[in-house]
Amino acid sequence: MSMIAAASRVVTARRSGSLRESGRGAIRYFSDSKGRVLSEEERAKEAVYIQKMERERLEKQKKQAEKEKLQKEKEGAEKSTEGAHKG
Image (cartoon, rainbow, N blue to C red; front, side, top):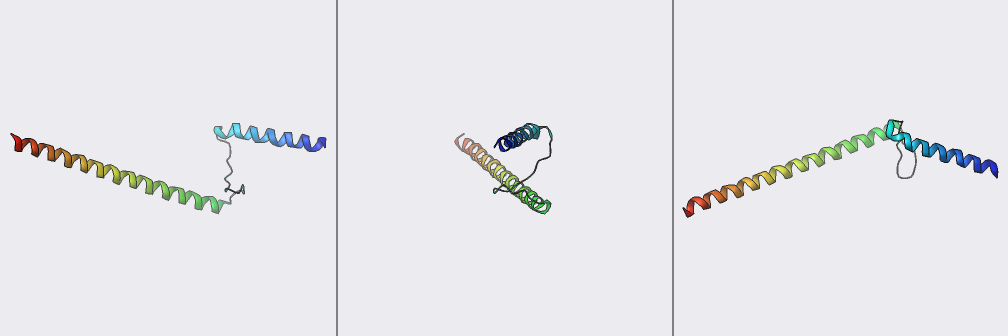
């Protein structure tokens, strides 16, 4: 029984130590939601997917910003024509 307790303490210490080191550039192992370590091919696929999603998100933000800019310009043009008609 004491061997199991000692082994679990070592595992716990290693885990907590690796968590502290993870912020300092330690090797990070990628895993899926089931806790399985991913292979290089799976990690590459995941990286491509993440890059694709980032690209799509940035494109969406860019389109939204352009749309808002055009809308503000349109509102500004309407205000200036209203002012000219009133005068």
